Amino acid sequence: MARRRGDRGVTAMERLAIRARIGAGERVDAVAAAVGRSRRLVQRVVGHAGGLPPRRPVRSALRLSVAEREEISRGLRAGESFRRIAAGLGRPASTVSREVGANGGRRPYRAHLAEARAATRARRPRRAKLARNRPLRRIVERLLEARWSPQQIAWQLRQDHPNEPEMWVSHETIYQSLFVQGRGALRAELTRCLRSGRARRRPAGRAKPSGELANMVLLSERPAEVDDRAVPGHWEGDLIIGKANRSAIGTLVERQTRYVMLVALPHGRTADAVRVALVERILTLPDELRRSLTWDRGKEMAEHVRFTVDTGVAVYFCDPHSPWQRGSNENTNGLLRQYFPKGTDLSVHDQAHLDTVARELNGRPRQTLGWMKPSEALAKVVASTG
Image 1 (tube, one colour):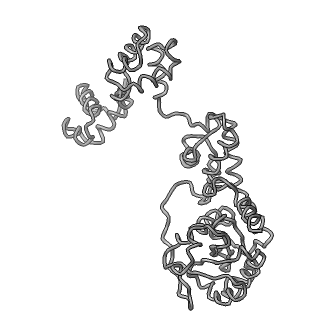
Image 2: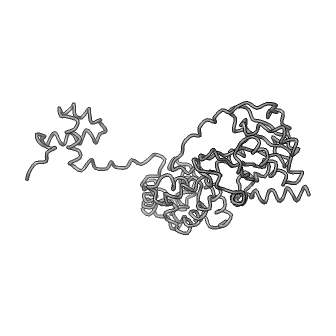
Image 3: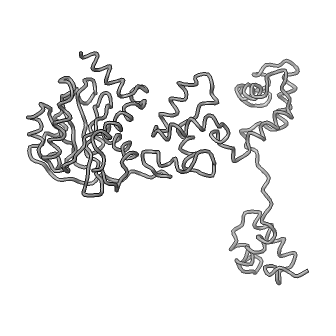
């Protein structure tokens, strides 16, 4: 039988020494130096031998051993309490209680069966819950396609299935099933339904600076009732920008209810065009919902004084590089990128389409509202003020 190329000139003792040293955790370079061979040859020897046998699992001291499970079984048969059994093992009573409860209770408990179940539970990787549960996966996929966030989906599942824990799933599990495709649970293309559209997490970028405007009233002069969101009618606004012809859409979010209004800008995003479009939308609101508007320092609001004259709505401006001072609006703009991706022409969306998108957003439950929908929150406010 011909000798493998990687084994030429390597004795059986050298091969055994290489595998033993690698198995003990030594680095390849160190092993090569010890046996007087090249690094590549050491790698070939290990590879041609089929790699290294898997290391025997090391049981954590926090886990019960076979002997301890035997002691628990004997104690249960003798009628001893959990505390007494735990004291003999040097373990907390809660550990014994959980162990017995997870294996059928006092009478059915058997040490060998408990050990086998523990070994099964410890196997990795586990199959994801969404991969195991087809009905649950279908619900999650349907809501993702409706552009619900994983947090909203997790909350809704608990409301719809209060007594069925198998139909619950955490938002983190949904994210992991999307981002880690090796888990094989959710379709990869569903990542486009997330507000970011990304298949991985990344830190948010820094806000770009904008120009100075005349006669600005700063956020520090805004009434306290705006900050605590106790009074409705205070709005946050901004533009989301498209690529073609610098198209844009105006976004307005009511601070107390998170209710969203979208504003078409068919004549561009000049200061005068933005003022006219915003005035038209704001004047559709009842008087009790027209109190103030907080905006970034974008030049599109250069006509803010005239806007206030036309609507009676005071305009306040954020500090430089502080988009978090319009947090509700920033969050909403992130949601809107699911409908209006960056780099697309936003001028193709007319007001009727924007109203449809706004209705969909206002129909989603929001965690910050105690899982009430913005449309419900606004209706409640209007009813109380009326």
